[in-house]
Length: 122
Image (cartoon, rainbow, N blue to C red; front, side, top):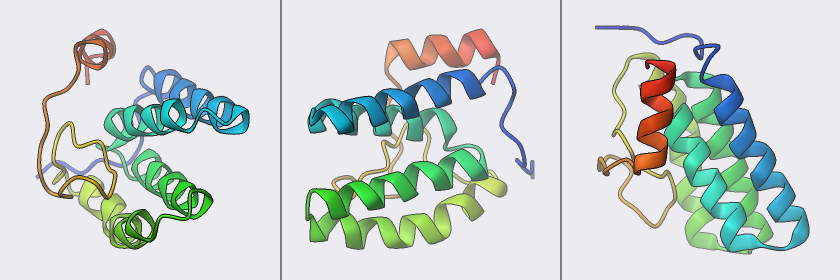
């Protein structure tokens, strides 16, 4: 079993960029675009405890912002368990992390994100 502790340095800028884009779109009121950037951040960071947990924390806060009980209650267990599952390498690859999808179901990774993973070799 491989244990994942820290995010690879080459991956951090891509994750951070998605979080910054999320913040910008969220402030501008472009909620669909903001959510899309959160999902991309989740996919990029889900293998590593800190970014995985951070993505779920931001998704929980987003759920409160849009007053979505489904998102709020869907994010609570993901927030609690997500980082632990990352730590032990048991994540559903490509899962966008929202409460609108099953938490353990893997999804295909979009070509742009695949290119990032290939570029940073993770």
